[in-house]
Image (cartoon, rainbow, N blue to C red; front, side):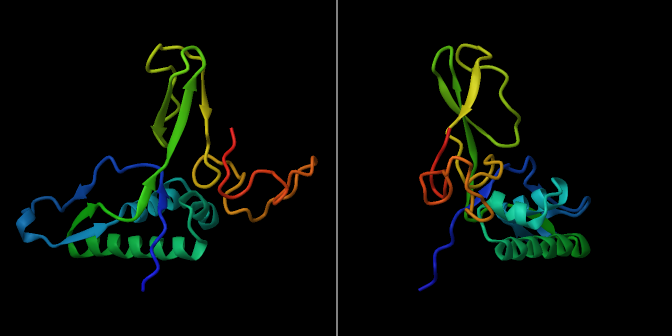
Length: 173
């Protein structure tokens, strides 16, 4: 039995998800599909300029898995360009990463995707007294806390790994 793939975190949906060579009718083209994980790997590595270790942490996968995803995406892009094929960005096993915000004026809570910027005001009452809450410990937005649990040092209060501190799977605010 094949082991089920765990969800990869994707921080941004592509704004355009289909590309084709100019002047060639679509019915004459073969199509290549890039998954959203492959798109995200390319975005993080090539446009955000993160190193592979950081990219893997952000996507909630191991570094070798990230390297395989990135290699697959690069090969597909090369095939798309060199052979003049159509390119679709769709599918995959992923979870869109959301940030959660709370307005302290009206207590309204809402979610916003990563990559669209921080909201300036509450969508309900338009107050600017908003704060981010309920940040996940793995994937986007953890700023080095939690995640895989590797490379962390216990804090000066003794709240290190296994001692009630922030660890894998736990949430903090």
